[in-house]
Amino acid sequence: MTAVQTTEQPSEESFGRQSRIIAFVVAVSFFMQVLDGTIVTTSLPQMAASFGVVPVAMSIGITVYLLTMSAFVPLAGWAGDRYGARRVFLASIVIFTVASLFCGLSGNLTEFVVARAVQGIGSALMTPVGRIIVLRSARKSDLVHAMSMITWPALTAPVLGPVLGGYITTYLTWHWNFLINIPIGIVGLGLVLRFVPDQREEKVARLDLTGFFESAVGLTFLLAGLEFVVHGTTGLAASAGLIAVGVVFSIVATRHFLRVDAPLLDLSAFKIQTFAMATLSAGTASRVAINATPFLLPLLFQVGFGLTAINAGTYLLVYFAGNLGMKAITTPMLKAFGFRSVLVVNGLISSASIGCFALLSPSTPDWLTYILLLCAGLSRSMNFTALNTLAFADIHAAQRSSASTLSSMLQQVSLLLGVAVGAAVLNLSRTVHGGETLTPVDFRWAFIAIALIGVVSSLRFLRLAHDAGAEVSRHNTRK
Figure 1 (cartoon, rainbow, N blue to C red):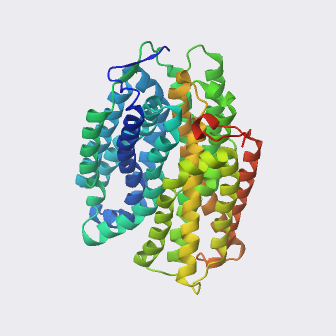
Figure 2: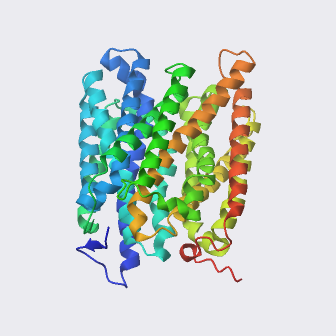
Figure 3: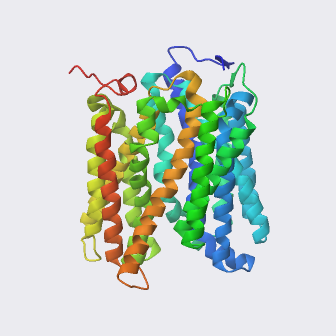
């Protein structure tokens, strides 16, 4: 592939401001996407009653969304290069928004499942292509701020979604959990048309159909297996079988990408230490801890402590505030200490805060719980932003599309893996003590296990060079 053609280039003086505006525009669409994935779970019982089915049958709506999304994610980078990132991003918003409308208007389970499948296609294209747009528009010096901007939806929506969904379902109807996407999608379209320039590659190789099929099957089976582990909708043997098939096809796809001349995904990004560590090795383990915590906390408060959804939501809003609070000082912290120190020290702080959740009980003073939630939210935000920025610190222009797609694929795996590990430890603890329901002791072991994973992943970042990503963080290693 050759250089990118851009029909609209900002001047040097306005480049930083333009890149920040573009990052904000992309973040608006990301927020709609991530919020939808977390808000829907709160309304499944009401939807089941509306459709005349048992609540457990509604899980297919979540599963089909996940499967279509995982099937089309590998295609995102190539599509952005072939048809233009701006055009594909616009198409993804349109697909997602229209599908949300039909989800909200569904009159039966079949209509809902079809709409969710289409919605998954829009979601698959949105994240990788949106990130490509940001990477192309931002200079190295602006990358931390830009990545921080597009990271906040992934941090805040999983916390805000269940709370907002609970209010909507209680005081309105479940339909509005999907119809809320309509105004957000329309605003997103207008912002993209106004601020995002047209970017495309001059020459793009033919679609690697073999690589697309193998990677799509591998990711789909792998995520399906992890999803079934989390929800327990199939036996352990069936889930393990799906995961095994996914791993086999992923290995086959990897060998194919390394062998052919014009692969769908360029794996050369994994030769860059910062990308490999931030996305695959230590980064995946760190994201397991990051993603498991928002899953475990609502269950701890509602199932472990017997609190109402509203009371649990109050606690989660403090955690949400912590996620937002770190955003303003992320750039100064990385400039002062660099990626290596931040990921090690902040990662250990984050792991310690997760471990402290194991000490909570119904009698713990509210003020102490609030402080712990705030600290956990702050450190989680710093870790997430640092990982996402470091991943692209040394990526070359020709690698951006594949690197963005690979990062999205691995983040989907780590998202479900974190939830699956948390659920597995909870169920294992419950089985060991022979209980019928989860108890605070089960949550204690789950938080300890997640904290240990966080500690190990944080220490692995000691392998980074002292000046890793310094061009992006602007950290002076000679101080």
